Image (tube, rainbow, N blue to C red; front, side, top):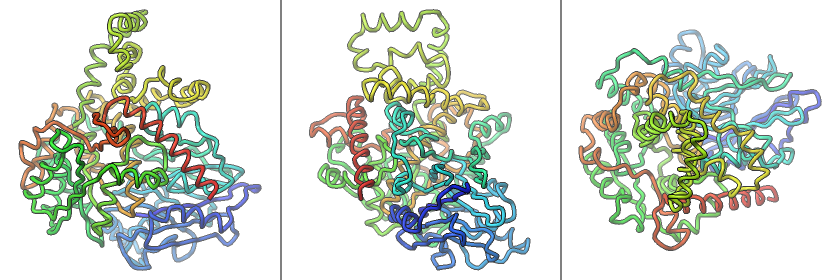
Length: 605
């Protein structure tokens, strides 16, 4: 796991990035790679890479980056892990390729030399990469199918710049810091910035499952090579039994244990992390060190994961480490949190602290149960979104119904309208899957945005963002079932823009690699035929029963609590539920102000 930065002055008038600027961009991401630094600049100075290395596979210098092919034609800078790299290496060896070391990076480099963009379908893992072709004079960028690893780019003045973090690009004074109305509107609506937007006008996220080729004519349009909705749609009609699901889950965990360093785990009191630890044991890992966070504010409540985590640790015989986090540590870390936060987000603080705890344990890699709810229909959205669409959707077709409903609610239920303004928008949005999902997942609805940001910027941002359009794009082609539609919406939006992105910045700030075996495209392809028919709770039962020693039935039956922290308590010093709407809005304003401040400090550093 690493951090990469680079550039290509593709136009004749494009100014190359100076060595000092490229080094500064690279070193802004120092925590992503404390084990090594690399720099490569083409002989003509018009292309270059900077790299920070966190050594996980092939700890020797033969895995150092940027890495060229022996003939010097191709050079790669890469961030991620390819879990099937040994099988791919064997395939290439049989075809005559000679390897210098034993890194997955070298395998990816030679795959590209042989197959070009076609190699992406062979890779199983998480990655963001850039490959320079000195003969064709092209820069190739690509991102993994589900968006686990980020990659951002800006094309300005005839020069393409790219990096693993937005804030690394901002080190370059040539990059405009003009805010993106679409990105900021998306943040206030959803709690994160929806890709391909960022918080800045000139910086874009390369979408998950896409590649981009930049020639001397400039960067092309990002091209898709993997699609969640299509995978779900194409799975219709195939049969997958319980045994097939268990085998696919175990196979994914086995692949995610490929490493030359110790792998630990996050342990909550829930099904996902417990099942993963059980599967780690089944796959042969004898010693498992796991970390659990605890908060005084949650003690004795339904949000306290400690009792369940202790039970799970005993069941699977893990070396259990408990880390207590208090308000004082939150306050002490707040500046560092916002400095590390690469894009504004209302989440990620929980991952910050558990990653910090893992680093203190001496771990460089940990498995997380992120993605189980999206894959196995675990969220309440799998019930609430279809119910809203099927029940309220037909009413949206009645002329004037939405306006009448708003008037009645304001007149007869004013307290409800003030406490939950979303009820005012039900008949505006419930008639489409995208609209029903917006009602369920949004922090704010579009008509509330004027109260959160400048009204003129809000209008511009809403028009450019087209959030409903982004949600609708997640459903093309139609997954063909209620579960499939919600799975695609959650995977391509909430998980991708919020959970995975927060996991990246919060873990890499502590030089910890988080692996997510339940966010795996091969696993999705294997389980996709079963998703459509999953009944409420059935998916979690399948996951719980996947290990040889199943997760206890009482854990499976326990209500879902999420991976929360008592931000409301810490912000106010009084007791209030951590998911209270007012707390979320206040935290969003804190995030926006503090994030902007961290960028200003970065600009003057």
